[in-house]
Amino acid sequence: MTYVAGKSADVLKRELGVETVVKLGSNESPIGPSARAVEAITTYASQSHIYPGPELRQLHDTIAEGTGLSPANVVIGNGSCDVLLSVAAQVLTHGDEAIIPEPSFAMYRIGARAAGATAVGIPHRDYAFDIDAIRAAVTPRTRMLFLTNPNNPTGLVLTRTQITDLLDALPDDVLVVLDEAYGEFVDDDQHVDGVDLLREGRNIIVTRTFSKIYALAGLRVGYGLTTPKLADQLRAVQPPFHTGSLALRAANAAFADREHLELSRRVNREGRSYLTAELTALGLRVLPSEANHVLVVDLEDVPAIDAALNARGVISRPTGPSFDLKGGLRVTVGTPQQNQTFIAALREALHDLAASA
Image (cartoon, rainbow, N blue to C red; front, top):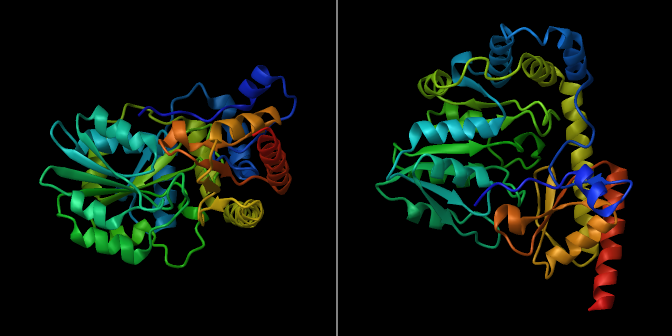
């Protein structure tokens, strides 16, 4: 599997000639970045000719303070994908196996394959991770397990009990990569923070991103939280000036802006609830999401629905090409107006497709 990026608004405008596009296909923030982050970029933009200096250490310290860990536990990446690929390259080698529950982010398979390891896919059980099958798949060659919580594209969460029971069953030498790209959006009180698991001495690395709730997708900043030993190993192989100074400054400012974080959570919570209710009212099956997107499943003709939405200037994300999951349509939570536009366009599309069948 290769990574398939979401369609851009410019491509849709060029291909179909639509003037206005509502893009709900890439899980981007609908409200944009913190004003503090924008100010950090504009303030220091004139210094872009200077290599990054103290900004990296400042972000290490900010993240450490915010998570209650030491800066030695933190590794900064050029997006969380960079951390995921780096840890796969450091831990996996030829002959190893990496367990990857499905459906999940394509970069897990890409990272395992690039390291020469075998990606062992575990089919879902009614779209949820099959915990029993994951445990049964562990062999003496298993060196890594990828978990996303909440998952992309389903939005489903693993509870504390599910994760801890799974960790208890794993051999000590199996590293768990816990991808929490969407963790800040979770409202379920049964959800477990990966930092708590790290404090318990679990063999894990928690990956997080500034692309989602912090709305800095275009700047490419992510980070990992793990043991000082593994963090040192990952930092040791990073090229110099790995992340740009403006990106680092913006991330540092965004992380500190709790008001904007809470606003993002509220907009997402309300929009997620609206989309779930409206999609259900259309007779569609929607999974109970805790992320910044919802997934409609068991659809009969996703390509036709997607084309009809595109013709109306709306972009969502078919999960066939991106996640090898047929019958799924992932929808990013947008602004209230964007959400309403999507529902209206989908209602029209479903009506027209039914009439022409």
